[in-house]
Structure formats: C-alpha cells, structure tokens
Image (cartoon, rainbow, N blue to C red):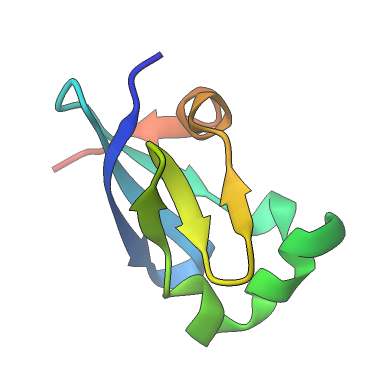
Amino acid sequence: MDSIHQVKPLANYELEVTFANGECRVFDAKPYLERGIFNRLKDVSLFNQAYVAFDTVCWPGDLDIAPDTVYMRSLPLRK
C-alpha cells in the first residue's frame, strides 16, 4: 500500500487524499464520527486541521487513520 503524501479537508467531512504514487481519492469520514475517539472530529474546526504525518492522515490530539483504511474506503477523485 502506498503511503499518503497529501491531504485536503473538504466539505461534509470528506478528505481529498493524494497517495505517494500520485493517485488522488476522496475519503468520506462521516461513518467514523460515531466511533470512539473519532467522535471528536465532529468539531469541524478540528476536522479541518487534518495533516499528513508518518505516511497517514492525522489530526491534533493523537488521532490518525490507517492509510490502508483510507485507500480501501475511498473513491477515485473525479476532476
């Protein structure tokens, strides 16, 4: 699995994710907002602070999601 190279928060709790191989995909994070610590991401200002560290998507407060999950549960970006 390729690592995540770039992330851009979008409206409606979605992320535009660019993988190291250049592939761009859209990840819908809404299904995760009711799961454990991801509940904190309902705060849009926190959600919008998404960044890449250690080859995956992270947020302040030690929140992260595995790149495999992001890839498998995302759709190709349509430009």
